[in-house]
Image 1: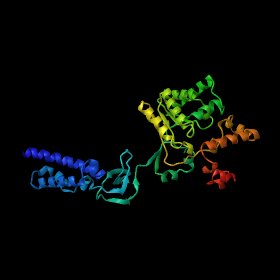
Image 2: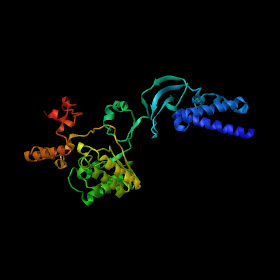
Image 3: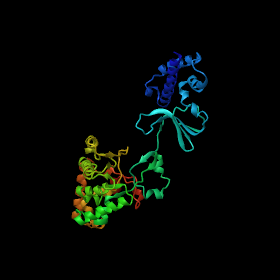
Image 4: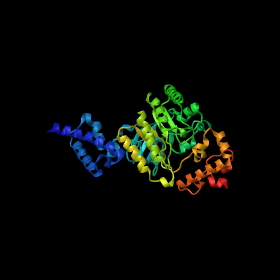
Length: 387
């Protein structure tokens, strides 16, 4: 009988220790045990200890049983002095779990404990009550190649909680197309297509991880789907990925998402859709459709992922508001067209039609972020700048 009781008691100790760890880290509900039930378990175990059922080699375990539940999981840390403890924060650990209240202990630049830390001493303590404590965010899509050199402290990233920037090299479809076809508004010849595919394979052999597209920009906007699919197939030979700033994120966003997914299917390549969103008031609500397309593709077994930023704005250059055909041949050709009153009137007409389709009355919705030639315009909307 005593052997049975001893086994059961040891088993109970193990369970208690396990549940204690869960409870101290995530709260009793996470373990499926209420605080009252655990209190009753503690009383029962202490009673068994007091009656002498265990002694000798189990002294350490007995002492742990005598401790309050919230102390047990920290007994092994009693001799540790942390460099920093962040206490009382709402912890979002990045695993997809719900947030929970807890502490974070850091020593020698490494996190040594997350959850309930108890009385562990520390050189420095931060009270994060009412604040969120999370791992540093990772920027998976950025354009910092030039800016980080001029501002190596990257304060804008630090203030946003970003501590890591993905730097894996993708080769740009626009770069490849411009190398072979300059800024021509046409489809490639067979020889030009083959040359572009050869450049893609060369880039992959040299260490690129895949191909990226900016199909809203010139000259990529001139490319048909089959051209892009063929280049994606060339990247797929070397286990590359296809990351796309899709062709349209506004009125034709549904078609553009479909195009990206279909390119992935045709080339048998993983697809990553960048800054997934819906622009223009007239299109708000269509994200139910575009998200549904991604979900369906994934359920069919295709590797399709998206990234999204949390703010309700976007940033790009003013040129995207001009019709694509106006840029054919390059900037010099654009200037010639703008100096032609008839062509200029046509460009203006198409720009106004585009505004109306987005349900914007004018260009006051867009703010000038940076115009080095006249910094007095910075911070003003386009309508104010014109006036």
